[in-house]
Image (cartoon, rainbow, N blue to C red; front, side, top):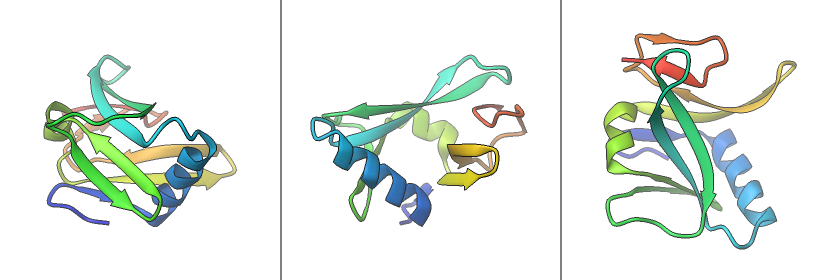
Length: 110
């Protein structure tokens, strides 16, 4: 799924859909950017049951992702992906705005 600013990969949509099906009280995954982390900013993933007026809403299959307007400034052009390999399973955000990131892939700097 593509919007003007963020892409949700098929693997991420499938995993988010499965997670939401397992917790019927939650209706979406919120992805946000916070200060901190070893490279300056970090991504946060939360399951939520409501959206805010300024949220970007991404929907694909059974997945629903919310991104607040402040976080969207830092995530413009990004792809949210889900990776399952020998190192483990994780959501990863491929952010073209990040000039540096840490080895764990959860923090970045602009």
